[in-house]
Length: 97
Image 1 (cartoon, rainbow, N blue to C red):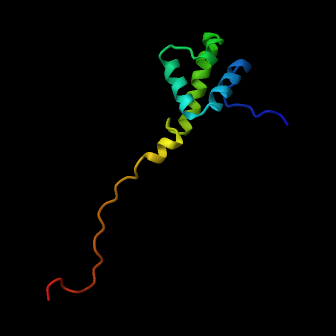
Image 2 (spheres, rainbow, N blue to C red):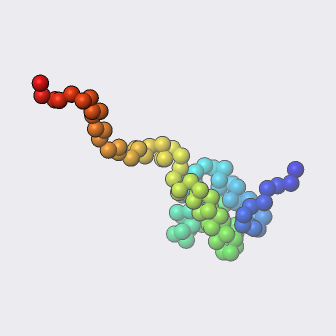
Image 3 (cartoon, rainbow, N blue to C red):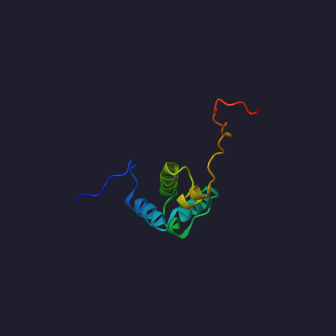
């Protein structure tokens, strides 16, 4: 079976780095993005050229955009939006007797 092509065409080494980072989990991906945005090079990325690093950062951002930049455990902790108060059903009776 042929490998699935990515939407962006990454060099093979950059693609392998994206795979490695993603296999370490959502939080690790977010940490890697954060480090890379600050100009730091995590171990997996340090071996890449500047151009490949930019490609990896763009690909990781694209992947996390699907999840809204939030890991599933964090999404589960977000409380639901408050609901407006419910009005009592009208019974047809006067509240005063």
